[in-house]
Length: 441
Image (tube, rainbow, N blue to C red; front, side, top):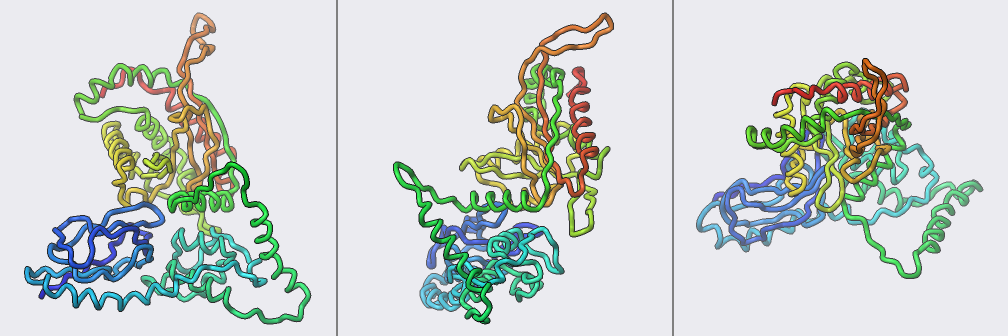
């Protein structure tokens, strides 16, 4: 009997664990090579995991909602034709690994210890790498970076996994409170109880519907809160006359699609202009690591895209400055279609250095976007509207109907000053206004 181990795949450069969402096959089922075995979720994206062999499933080693490190065996497949007869005995042994996730089941209790007052700065970097999920849990549970550094990690290269930090939180909450003598202690200990009472009295009443956040919405919420807590946001605004872009696209979109098999939208044109300006202002393409500024040499531009659920995700166009309008259009359309069909891969959302969001898609004139950590800037483009504008001509000023669009740039004021932020934003607007209406496709 030939047994093949199916392992949790590595879904991205910084992703060290994944949560099992659904098993498509059960013990005893036949499965083909590359047929979907299960669905998993990381803190970036949901993905399907295909089988790496054809045969009969003899063991499923983890349950739905278990958090599993990458590289861990999650199922076994018998590739022999006669393997079905032994499926039952092997499956019976499957419960052996079940105790592994058991410690995680303990529901985290809000700590009543004075240590809850410790700093929860999730932006600080320690000696080890921490996934965004672990940092979010640490911030929620008021675990400082110094405390986080002391948690033993069972993940790859000793990294702290979700299981590790939840176990630590559970143990910390269950630990007996020492030093009952000091008077301040009861006051601190009483705080959680008071907040619990407030929460109880704030229960909605009347004709309401309570909807629990889904997993993706919780991740987005944590990411947004962490971004505002990490970066002092400043937003600058400008407007651009995009009449030449609108007229060029109207005149060439049918020809472009016929010649290249791709629809030409405004997004690749905007991304092209942003990439060109990042080359001129490289300090907008950075991240912060403690007291160090990390300058990114690659220009990987993320574009906020709506999922079928209504949530937003940010797939990334890598090396956007090296691609022409055709290549950018292929990338934009491909990633947008993958997002709409829930086919994005984890790597599709990794490595972004700057983000663009099109609030005009939803009819907004402008917006104040939240920075996509660990980046330091995000550009929002509004809807394109016709407006009367004053134009300077050799024969004098005239009023003409032009296609106008507002742009807004939110930036991290720790490292991006108003001068740099405003200069970059103005450069993008100038780049769009200078678009050649006679440009060939």
